Amino acid sequence: MWIDSHCHLNHERFEGADPHALADEALGQGVDAMVTICCHIADEFPQILEIARTHPNVWCSIGTHPHDAGKPAEQAITLDNLIELANSDPNIVGIGESGLDFYYDYSPRDVQEESFRKHIRACIATNLPLIVHARDADELCAQILREEGADGALRGVMHCFSSGPQLAKAALDLGFYISFSGIVTFKNAYELQDIAKIVPLDRILVETDAPFLAPIPHRGKINHPAYVKHTGEFLANLLDQDIEDFAARTSQNFHQLFTKAKAP
Ligand SMILES: [Zn+2]
Ligand SMILES: [Zn+2]
Image (cartoon, rainbow, N blue to C red; front, top):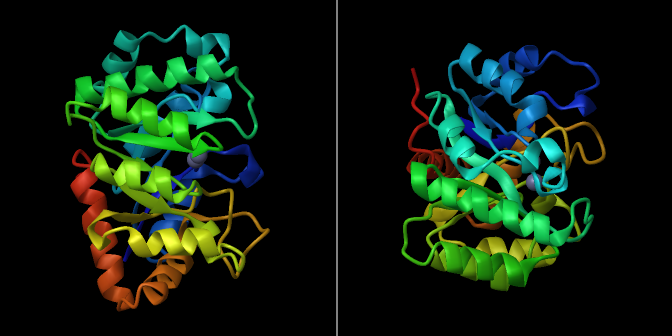
């Protein structure tokens, strides 16, 4: 009934759980489909692609997280390499997650920016959607998206949205989707809940970002794709929507954006 538009099935925080078992478990618990997201191409992309190839209704992305943008193996990946890899398999449905994280600053800011622009250009070249990770970098993130996406050819999603209203508006103006994670269910997330109310219903996606950020009532525990329903139900209530209608609508939105994600 729900689609988890963003999770990390191979993440070490799952404490050695088999990613294939995690995918099967979620698919058996009300999750219709999911995208397992790449953060470090050299280290994890082969495994991620293998997960997506194995399971119908599990797709993957390719990209370098801003945290990893400074790693030599990731910096060595050229725009042409990224385009070629992104086009190499029908299970690769998006590019990212890429963006700017000036909260942790694990990679130098100029390197994050360069990597972000490379991912955007790869999206335009492949017509794949961009999966944006943005934290404490609202202004520069909006500026880069506007510059690189000026001709309207860029499509994408602001994943795990936790930025301010200005970045939400800038992204919506560019035709982007906004994806909400368990953060929106937290009791003190008033600002984020207000932003959810200004996003048009045909631009909202839901995600877990599992294993991180479990929604209430699992806050603080390891997150699972099956918990996407808690975030979805919370948003439906917040937005005065019927839960089943809202699930159907977010799934439809997902397919509008991730056009390469085809059910077998
Ligand atoms: Zn992220
Ligand atoms: Zn993520």
